Length: 189
Image (cartoon, rainbow, N blue to C red; front, side, top):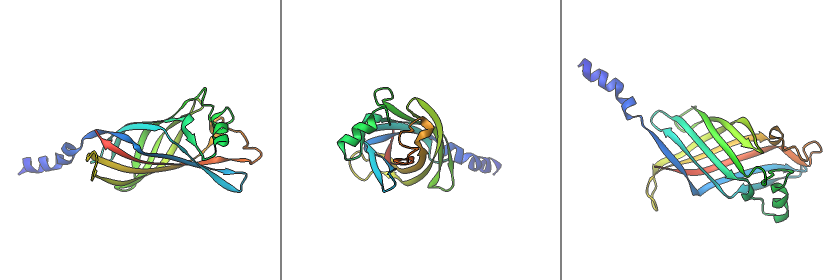
């Protein structure tokens, strides 16, 4: 009987298994919004991004994670504005072609929500950020690849001046706060 109780007590750790999840590039949306002269927010996207993470679903433990975004893939629906956002006033894509987020720690509030701490490298500078994360769904995909997939939403607000992107902050033409939203499906490998 004691052996059975010990075995049952150890069972959850035996079920725990960290697995690699790759973000599906066809289902990866990277959006942002920032105030323009206080009249309205400009809403934009980064079209190209990739990432993967190592996660143990049973224990809700994130072991590592990395997302890379092509800075020159920015799109706001206005070609001239996009070119300006790519230049030295903002993303400086010639010298800083990749935006990188490296995850450090996931803290869960419930089986589906939590906060993710990590480091964001933008314009060659790295600073910590915190994202609010929601696990929308975890199941075998109903069609196509039919692999086990996690659907995740993550949001944060950053102050772009913290990374040295201070163009038009002082005069209020472009907001300092940038709301960031990631929506993605990650396929278990």
